[in-house]
Image (tube, rainbow, N blue to C red; front, top):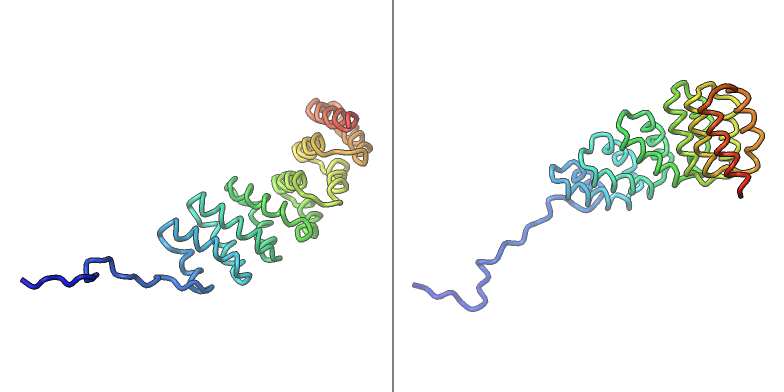
Length: 208
């Protein structure tokens, strides 16, 4: 029986070649892998490829695993292109709360890029989209936020949208919102919910 020579590595696991190249094409292919961990790594590495923005955003709508979605949203924020902003704006209409909330988080981190969309979103015919936009304004660090919220208080006809703006103002409102707050109370005179929310916002502003 022949002896095995010292140093014979025939029993060692053979070196496997990578299934996917680490370039853009390879990472995009990996983004569709059946293994969630592989998709997660691809989503992370695509942050280095601006051209991947469309694919990253498209994957969000079909990705079943929350951990992979989280990385996709992080990568979208890092890429921060107009293409990403437009895709996140569209996700505000999603029936999936996770997608909507993730989109709001991404947009909140891109205040300069999202600002040009706010007026249109606040005029959207869908009241839910207007509410989600108001929620976004609560996290958006942009100098126009007080004026946008005033616009809602002065013009929006839906109680729920105005109520959402009042809830935001109870946390971030300032003296520049006082006139609009009183105007909203007058516009919805007799509505106990609006009256209560206005009172909370005024109390917070006056305490600061």
